[in-house]
Image (cartoon, rainbow, N blue to C red; front, side, top):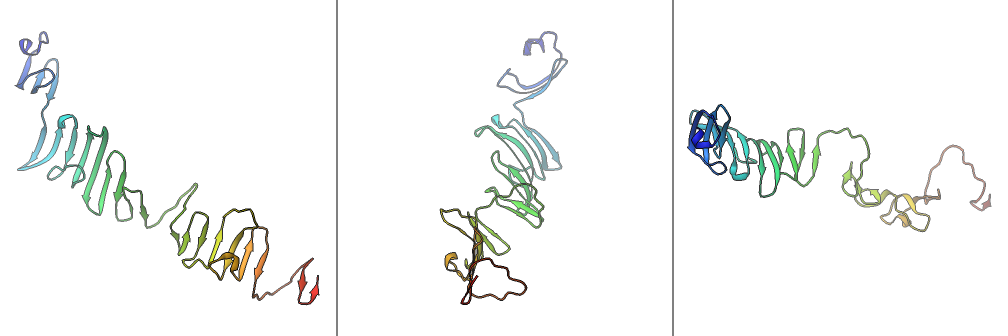
Length: 212
């Protein structure tokens, strides 16, 4: 092959159209073993089940029956040259898959799913560390940026901070300041109706017509 490849004392096999950078050829010699610009395909009978392809600058490996494109049934691992992103997919069907498009990770299985938009669904979860939420619902409680309350807003608790003595807990009205039961951050309790058992201790205030 010395006169073809320019490599001194090279012996072996060369098949295809040889050009050092643009050819499509198979080369097996005492210097190198390479496929240049050629897609490799493995077949099971009449079905292409494995492909290793240069892909015109977007190389990939695909396994399936038949071999898939990205996101189709089978296994795909490749480099997307136009976006300069690596990507892969392990896909069985619309309910069983794992994909990475170079930006977003998504999966779906019998017990959990994560959409490309970041929506996570799980039948059960144990989480450690901080959890931050400014919207959504937990057990029927609506989560907002500074409160948790029932759907009607008549029962809830708030972390809102203003210049005043903010109401932290309330029940009975969608407007906390009008709720018949409310407690401020200073501990001031308002209850328009109450049944209390046990001892009551007070050092100031009024009880009926009596001043304490």
